[in-house]
Length: 242
Image 1 (cartoon, rainbow, N blue to C red):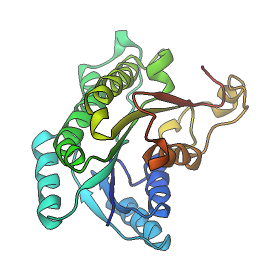
Image 2 (image 1 turned 180 degrees about the vertical axis):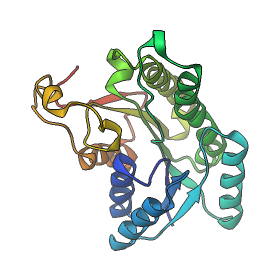
Image 3 (image 1 turned 135 degrees about the horizontal axis):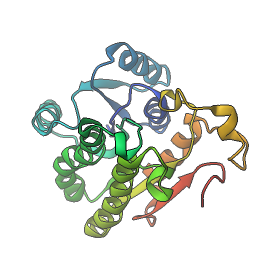
């Protein structure tokens, strides 16, 4: 059995990634925090691909909760390990900095950056022991370019990019790769409330991306074929920013 964990796997890009990895032969661990209905729907879709999976409920920003859930999974699968990790969980709390509540700053960073540490750190030893692992972190064009009204989100995603580059150098000798994917505007719940018609005019491809397009890139980075690619940030944004 090959296992892949996708945080925030119940909807949007996370769901598309779960399905792509299922098509690649992985047993899928779908992390979610609240929306059981959507997580169950993702699990049904995974099974429709001919693979099995399971749901694992925990808040990535809560270290104790995260470690307890991962330890429980490991105890239930003593001969297995999670060889692919997709750190996808994240939220937006957009506002100009001058009007941003402290809670909106800390919550965005706690989920994206704190979640990266809380989930990745306990899974690294097994990847290194087995001398194979794939860690794919979901960044954003916001973390590369910086976007007004998203100082918190840009800081969180910029931090993920820097962490990706550093960790990649620590674990490369153990055949563990660490890469980041930086989407632009993708048609998911995360872009609700944005003016799509106006934003499309700023994108050379003249459209928003699809979750499945991001999932294809994640699938390649999770595959053995990508073994010499590590420490990279790959943009998928229709030419919006290069």
